[in-house]
Image (cartoon, rainbow, N blue to C red):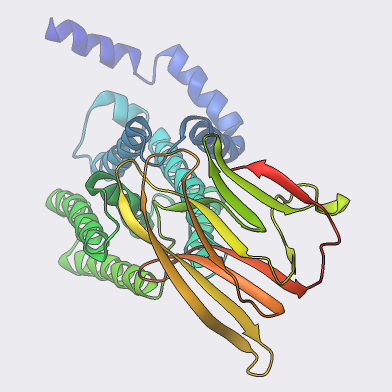
Length: 379
């Protein structure tokens, strides 16, 4: 039985097989289209299938991508060193870099989707830009994906970016120790791959192993600096909605909010950008923060106004409230202020360690009566 199976593989995957020859000719004819096709395929698949950052099926897909990425990197070098002689891999070795590119594209496109949801376009946007650059570079420099330094560096970043949000999803907490644990596990995963490559002589010398280790260590140090500088978004948390209102009331249908009718050119806006404030008014801020199911943490509304004399933002309040994850639309938290001065204001929605989730900018104008009627809606 085993002989028949072995004969089948040798025959079917042999380069003499006309179907294999036709496939190779077709690939070489349209080879220049392979990178963009791989990119579109990976990104489109993730966009359609990835829904919630805490959904088990989505995370299993990404975990599978990481596993296959590590295996394809190993397979490429072991085949090149003539250590792995499995006919399907040997006969189709030219497809392995394409597979590496596909898995990298699928992973980084998913990370862009998830991290984009958490980024506030402040300091946290820096890490999102890095992910975008890696996603694009994976397509532009696909011909360099046979370079072991590039492969190991990208593999480490892929594992690290995944564990940064996956561990908090599992443990229902976003504390710093879990981030540090993710980094250590990422180092362990890369160390395992490097050990196998070194054992089978794909890493050609101790000096090369040291250089690879130093590169990974440098990336690890850099990402830790990013974290403590608040340059990595507070994933898996994300703001679904945030706005400033004249009124906020809780009802059976949800939170009823009231804001002034917006100009025709801003019909999409459903909160106050210019807040006309009468002596009897209260300024309300409501933010809906998504968190994975059962994750509990504290969210802060950081109220600030711009002091023209100091030419800087001055804090008036930093109000906290607890949230419990699970709701698709996010956990809705409300804070308010009564005594406000005219001028520019902002409310920053942030975590306990001041990582920014979102920000609402608005202007207070003192008036005797509102120039536009209030519009009511449900949030």
